[in-house]
Image (cartoon, rainbow, N blue to C red):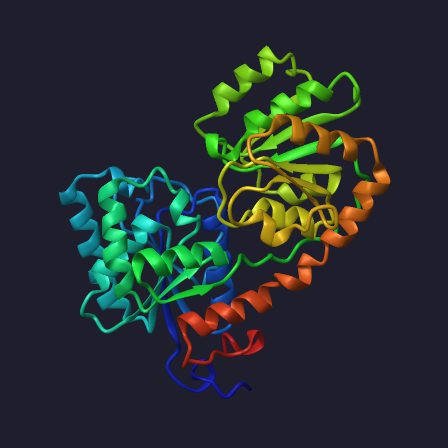
Length: 380
């Protein structure tokens, strides 16, 4: 048996905080982290700012305590000052009740509120940025100013890339560590690859799916057997559907909405196209590479270039460049051997970003002085 607090004494306690557990990259990462830590004997509470009327997309183990703070969905930044303060006080009461060894929050506005709620309680506070902060244009001026003030009071700020970490150090004078996303355990699916392009992500302007449609429209006559499936939901769905109609792609492009078994689409597809204008650290690209899928990604600031070496394990193209995107897609659509070679090299991300390796980095940041039990010792 492991000689650890989880095996012989009071269990380590963690409080994780996020806007919601709706479909999204940050939500997937935090729910996976909650399940991983709980399996290793840590007492995990996961709280979200939304209320129970917002359905969770990701499944938590029964050993993870689930709490809703009930702050009108996850759109904290749009609420009145009174509602925000009420939510902060609820979180403060929760911290006093749970008495965690550490609090970990994801995403900027949630991070600011968590730092304020934790003030004077003597708990370790770690917050994580999930996009490059310089590119987060939807964050209002007041929240940006509060971030600059509050982040220096966190015990640690975690960034996903070196570029984002440098920005946080310069602009927020925070103590920063870099931890990329972990690659979850992927299934072994033996599906024949189809002439299929997949795109995975929220249907928002920043994901650049309009560029994919425009690029594919230029290629559709040359590759009549190919089609596109878009996995995800978002505010741009109707606009993208209208664009698909204007480009005469309605018989070749399918919008699938939110899909739990995205692995099956990654196993069937021959190409993932990720034309984002902005990124943090793209889970869709990481998981596609882990499944041995050839990837074409926009070389947007931070994220894709830390995963892809152009021409070796994927392709990088300039941001907002439909011509370059169409050329890269065409080259790979025409060459099964090139797709196979890129996919073979891409699978090496399974080692570089393995969950065990990345979660050990998180352990050092969140609970640096508290070991936990092995998975087999977690619940005795």
